[in-house]
Amino acid sequence: MPPTCFIFNPTAGPSRRRDLPTLVARHFGPLAADDYVIRPTEGPGHAVELARAAAAEGFAVVAAVGGDGTVNEVGRGLLGTAAALGIVPLGSGNGLARHLKVPLGLAAALRRLAQPAFGRIDVGRINSRPFFCTAGLGFDAHVAEHFALAGTRGLGTYLRVTLREYRRYRPVPVRVELNGQVLATDCYVLAFANASQYGNDVYIAPRADLRDGLLDVCLIDALPVGRAFRVSLAMALGNLPETKAADYYQTARARITAAAPLGFHVDGDYLGRTTEFAVELLPLALAVAV
Ligand SMILES: Nc1ncnc2c1ncn2[C@@H]1O[C@H](COP(=O)(O)OP(=O)(O)OP(=O)(O)O)[C@@H](O)[C@H]1O
Image (cartoon, rainbow, N blue to C red; front, side, top):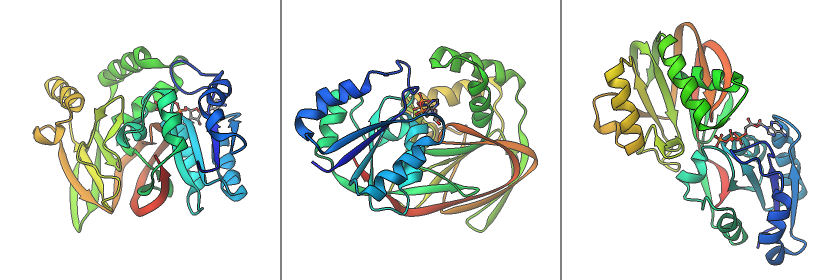
């Protein structure tokens, strides 16, 4: 098994696995002997530094133990290094893990990591910030912002925040340049998908491929109640492109200018508001061990 550094976020996920070191030792220890270390994060952003340090120490695999936010931080720390990203999915949504078919059970995920398959995946970037799963402008980012402010987490809070903000949210006019064309449209949601889903098997771009050198772009210009139901159902069924409720494009880069400051998220974390966005894809820029 490859030397592995586990970087674990004790606050990720619904169950807050503060006992993770014991569990990893139980499942991985007998297989690994001296070949692994476990390093907990102490706050947001810490996993970037821990991952970079682990790669510099020569660990072949640096495993993010948490959800997509933790995966994003570990992945960012590993970009440009020789180490591969592993995932032990303990988050709430686990979008990248689900796309990559990493087992969701802890014991199975650890067994897989002991004998991983090495490969590479594309990496997206929005305003210089890397993303591995999805980035987006508009309502999704607005919900991510208010979810972070809600005080509690979990699916119940997420649904409550989504419904409340749906009644308040108004789309913003944008100008989108991609593939030599210019779209002047309203942005309710403009999502850039490297992986197919937001997590929890909710598919924003079911045809997205992590190795095709392209981002799948999903544009929803308005979301009246009837369309909101259709979009929600289609995202759960994984057939949104087959409906007429969203427009799809594929591109390796895009520029967006918004008529008013527009919120954006990266792998589900709200990053703020701005009017200019540059999106690009770095082909096969990250090594993975899954
Ligand atoms: N020790 C820590 N204390 C508080 N926050 C932390 C700590 N370590 C990491 N974080 C932050 O916790 C946030 C949430 O983590 P993560 O996204 O992995 O879990 P999740 O939200 O439950 O899962 P998912 O994104 O799959 O829904 C991350 O954005 C990360 O910056």
